[in-house]
Image (cartoon, rainbow, N blue to C red; front, side):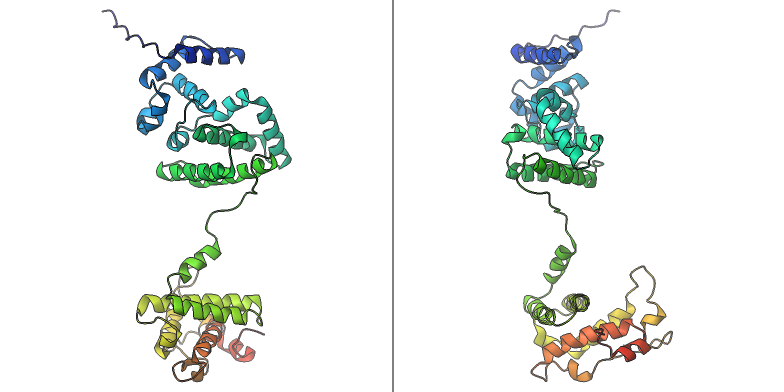
Length: 347
């Protein structure tokens, strides 16, 4: 039985196919039947190349290998913009195509990356990402601006988060390294900068969960003691007040400012310190609790009770804040050490 012959592909934009083959021939690359068929298959399925980005991702990835090579050439030369999802999912080696179309840029980029200490494999990964930006925006590297680098970085990372098993962290690191090379190549006017949340961002997010008036009073107090106490002491005080404010905000919605704080709030915070697990798991060590293994029935108030009467003294709020900072340090040290040092942690 004779096998049925495949239907002939329609002839669409033969001039573009011939130009593609001529470019490959000038580079000493294969221009056989499979190469020609791969280019014609794409143009037959997507006569208007602008429609390629609108295809479902599964359809974009289903093309033949030779067709993907044609897509890479179209993307690097600015004739097709595939979109971030295709670039992240397919991971095309656009850097090789860009190196053939602009060898001077490739040489300058690689020399700059080597001078910065990057290995050739890492530098080529960066150059491949550079070609991804070219494909995303349809412009050559010298035509891209800082806004394009920032937008492209965001689009690639968002695509990596949507598509499973595409290494968001590795991509973020490679993009950060690329920014350094771009700056020294004079392709960008900004130094690389970390954009992942740091501890300062996390602290700001936690303070945002505290009532505004209460947070402002506590932060004003921290600014005041910052001029007289050691940085480590101020850092511990900030952590204490932030923990205390978060606990109060979570358990008592009636507290909106410092004047609303009562003795019971401070006692609850001390009980919370005793009950919470240690940083590495398990209960707190006996040396961190006054009295060793004989845990008291109620949390000890190791600071003067006068500092807890915020509603009876003109400076009650400040006394509560100072009492919290002193009491937390005394609670975490052995009772004997707290007695020797006075319990204020300032030496």
